[in-house]
Every structure is written in structure tokens, then in C-alpha cells.
Length: 349
Image (cartoon, rainbow, N blue to C red):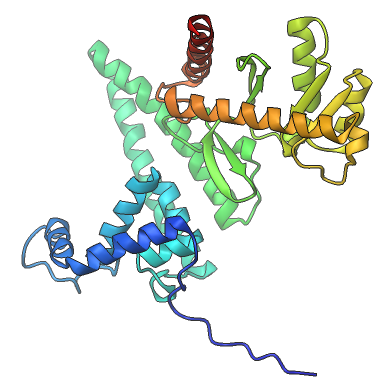
């Protein structure tokens, strides 16, 4: 037997072979060849010329801040997603020049202590807010002040829920269900959506159904983050409600695939059922032939491109309207606008 020797892991990740990584490498060389850029960034970050880099808590260097800002703009990340991808992506971490020594790992004891300090400050702030509400309510206040008081009461209520869920999850070690959590004080209806068991998004899961006309023929905005596999029957039943019959053929994302869902669809006398991922299912059980299965897979790819078009051109990727009712209106406004343009283009062709 040959003994396998494990080489020491490098402190900085090696370059990966990918076009995007090559682009980042080229940008990195431009920054390296113009060091005055980082000097200007350092001046903007420092309040006064006498500020010392050694003062205060250690943080990112001016160059790391610059590079992280470039990544944020380049990929259109939010600050939350930026933090995730810096940790998760080898090429982004390499571009930002953030290695193992820069990550600042914290053990559970240190993390709990910091959470306790944060909870202490939050409770004190809530105490101030309660006092402000009582003062306004006990005095003859203007209508504007009373409206402000109502908003403050709502934020106090939501903040208290955040404190409670944090104590349960961090201090007591309890696993808090997502349905009992608040993810946004400003949009409390927001759900957390975990995609591919890794990326996290905040909003609501939206299921779209497209037809051969390239129109979006149905839209379901779900509560919570239900698995796709639990929505197959629901989406098919909605087609029955709309058209008074089930479709003859369907093509669904891989997440909808399961033997039970295939059985349900066949029980509705749907002749051909194509899941993008087979997940142990046989083609002959899903469709009448391999040719039909491939045709349906290509059809689903066309639907995906239509959804991508709505995201790019109709603002479907991010809602700017406030409140759950307005969120739903925004979703439908994007879909209706896209459908109208599709119809108009066909008429003009």
C-alpha cells in the first residue's frame, strides 16, 4: 500500500479556470498596477488624516474594501449576499485578497457573548421606545405625532419578537421554526427562501406556469418556503380550475419530481409528464417515448428563458413596493405587462 501524503493547504486559494475568474484576475492586475487608487480609498475611509490604521478594531484594508465594492457592483449583490459570496466563492475571495487569516472565526462562547451584548442594547432601546409611546399617549399630541406613535408601537412589537426568537435560538439553543421568525422589521411578511440548500433569498416563492403561446398562464405566490415537490398537485389542480381540464402534457422543474407526483399526474390522465431531473424515474414511465421527453425538456427550457426575460426587463427579480398586498400587485403587474408585450409583438409580426 502507498501512503497518501496530504500537502499543506495554501493560505490563499489558487486561481480557478473560468472566464469570470479570468475577468476578475484582469481587473485585479489593473488595481495592482495603479496603487494610488487604494490611497484615495483610504483617504475616503479615514475621517481625518491623522487617523491611524492601528486604532480601533481590526477590519478590512482599504484595498479589500475597494475590491469588495467592485464585486458588489459587478454582480449586483446586496450587502448580505456579498458577505455570503465572499465566504463561499473561491474566486471572489481570491479577488478580494481575503485569506484564512482574514476570516475572523469565532467560537460559540464568543458569539454568545456578543449576542448577549446586542440583546442588552436592544432591550434598552425598546425601553426608550416604550417611554416615548407612553409620553405621546399621555399628552395632547398632533395628528402627525400620533401617527408616529402608531408606527413606533408596531416596530416595538416586531423588535420584541426578534429579541424573543434570538434568545430562543442563540441563548437557549432552541430550533425556532421559520414560520415563527421575523426576517424584516420593515417588511414583516417576508419569508426566507433557501435555494439549492445554499443560497438564501428574502421575499416569497412564486410558481409560474407557461404555455406554448409564451404567455404566463398562472401564478401562485406561496406562504413560507414549501418544497416544490409539495406543489405539483396544487399547480395541476389550478390548471383544471382555469381551463376546466387538465393539460395533456406537462414539463416541470426537477424539484417537483417524485414517484408520488408522477402517480398523481398520471391519475389526472396527463399523457406525458417530464421532470427536468429524473430522480430515479424512468423515461418510459413519464412519457410515451424518449423523443417526447426530450421535446418537453426543450419546451421547459424555453419557459425558463421567458421567466429570465421577465426578471431582466420587467423588474420581476426584486419588488420595490411595500407591504404584502403591494408585493402581490407588483408580481402580477410584471406578469401582465410581459404578457401584453408578447401579444402585441405577435400581432405586429
